[in-house]
Length: 100
Figure (cartoon, rainbow, N blue to C red):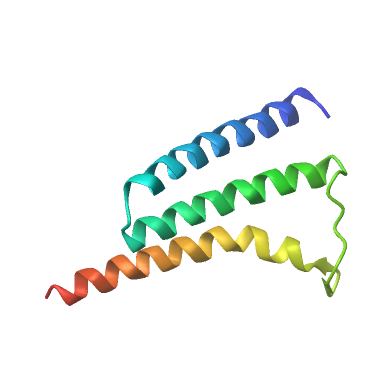
């Protein structure tokens, strides 16, 4: 692992942890559905970051259900945050459309 990969990995962990921390702080302050989905998406993003780094170091082995040549976890984790963000944006759009 060269210095570029170390900086890349450390920056993903640091900024992901910072985002997850502030998301948890926000979670305790709000009960709005859209914001709750954004918080859950941010935490899911951090889980994906940690899992991918553990997988990079060979600590988290990809066993279990395989679809084609891809483990199910590797298909779900990268897409899970985006799904929560989509749901949050949908809640906000629906909320705005109902006002008209």
